[in-house]
Length: 176
Image (cartoon, rainbow, N blue to C red; front, side, top):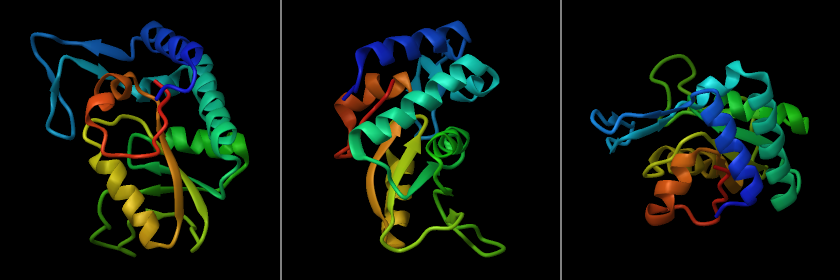
């Protein structure tokens, strides 16, 4: 579900302007899921462009509060959504955590980095989704810590293109 077509259009325009969207029909990209795709959106490039970064931060923060009120915590799915999750948390004045696909094998062996408490409401920010595997692992880890996960918000065009047919994630809202 796209929350706002104008936001979707402007986000797409920004991504095209900064050349974050790459096309390789003759040599498809391999995504972390193993899928091959002729299109790739490198959301990390948005971090180098103030106007784009600011727009995405503001729109994601607005989508969170407009749809669900103010959560207790913002979480980013490691590693691609960490910076955008931080931006949203900063915009909303909230704590931030990030969630790895698996616990570390050294140190404190955390899967969730940052302070989280049982019973907190969490909005998970994701950058790209194909099968939803990483996001589902993050949601599972947060729920195992006793958190209530309201929604996750990927903002990539890939989401709109592919997830509409393959989503395993109920209650998700997408900003392209």
